[in-house]
Length: 234
Length: 180
Image (tube, rainbow over the protein chains, first blue to last red):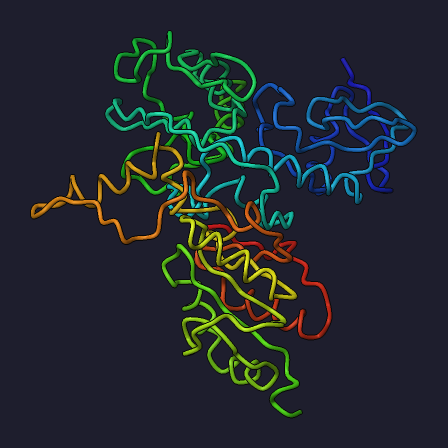
């Protein structure tokens, strides 16, 4: 079976990619940078973080590039004054939702949210901040979850389900009150399904899940899902 | 240029650790160039008692944690043409604002510091400024014109913002912000 190729324009560059590719994947393949947080190569796309929004010529609304497939003749704009403003607001909303204090965080200087805030020039948060005081669960022998730093990207939930095949993690509640839970909202130590594989800590873009006593620069591995899945195919 | 026509610079230290002032000093020899172009009229580095009028640029380190600081900050705003939040405590609340995660934190922190952790004469002092219910970043109390995040902000960023402002330009923080 031959796969069809699709031709489109991203920021004026002519690009050909396989049908079914998302705009974000097409951009990454061609070295065009679109800010993103919830997207991770190898995992299903959720469009949760709204950072990868792009403009499509001829369309009034914005599209999440991670979950919008390419189509023939599409003209994508990844960088504009409007998009910059939206992205800065999105980062500010993420920062305002929980207790994000970089200076005392394990992920300081190893954080995708912090890096994007710096890169996009988010020099302050215009919204009043929530100062959540959720209890940290450090009951597991070495995995720790601090929900005050969680941005609800669900990378951990997806890698646990889709790559490790365990689904020990999931979400409870709705909107900003959502929380990552272990098993049926039990403490991590009591989990009967968790295999302690650490993939959740490897893919967490912030400092919400980490390995106790291990520097995050060592733990984090953005390529883990892709790596495991590519080995599985062989 | 006679010294009295140079732009007036003031610095302020609220609830912070003084690290941002250290970072300002960390500009080393660049301070000499800065000193040629400004006059330092108020701050922890100057022995002036009252905040002067008609200050051109005020750099403020630290978050707003008590009523005294909030009132003073509002006064400072009135007398400052450009007000800059210097460092993460001033920009976000940072470490001082961690008490916001605790219920009734104004009382809880005093209880913790002066009663629970005291081995002799546990007593909450009555002569310290009354704590606010919450710790606030500057822009939740007064209008802030520019922000220099960082814990501490890199010395170069402070110099960059001051140089741009003194040249009548607007500093751009894209790729320059440095939280944490």
